Length: 262
Image (cartoon, rainbow, N blue to C red; front, side, top):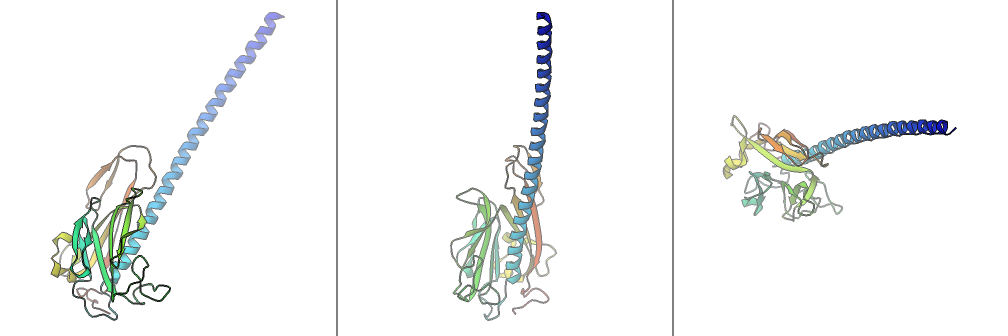
């Protein structure tokens, strides 16, 4: 009986070993499938957030550019309704603005238009508001935009500075903004640095391009994309980048066929 018992026990141990091996194989395959599905879900969610951020940023910038020069109750200002900086933000007085370079290499944009209940969303007290929803007491709204990393989180964001107040982030994920301007009679769009101060009133349209950085860090590997200047860029931080752009006509530009203050 002893040999028979030993044989029976050996057979049971073999079966257990095979069962454990098959179980581990199934668990490993399940975990691998779960990781792949989770990674696919993360990529899809990241892509959706990127498109949402791009849509919000371009919609905000397009609305502001379209409003440039709207003057329902104000005479023509002493300076242009629009002013831009190449790889820098707009600083200084509204009517004599200048540029300050940005480490993010984002362009800066200043837009001005009449401050009234027609061109802005009124506050709860009925006062006109700037891009941050804050009440404006001046006759003209001045909004400034640029992109840079947050000083607290390090995440790139689109900032708005309204009415001379401290800039606040309005859209997360915007790593860089690039704006090219169409001047009356010009065959192509111009960089802000190539436009003389007296020519800003001749701008009748703008090409706005933004680079949106992904929100989820994926595997640390090289990724390539084409930036707003049409140049290939390689990044190694595991974040996806996508580029979006829109051409916006300035409705109230004196250079456009239907322009002029309304």
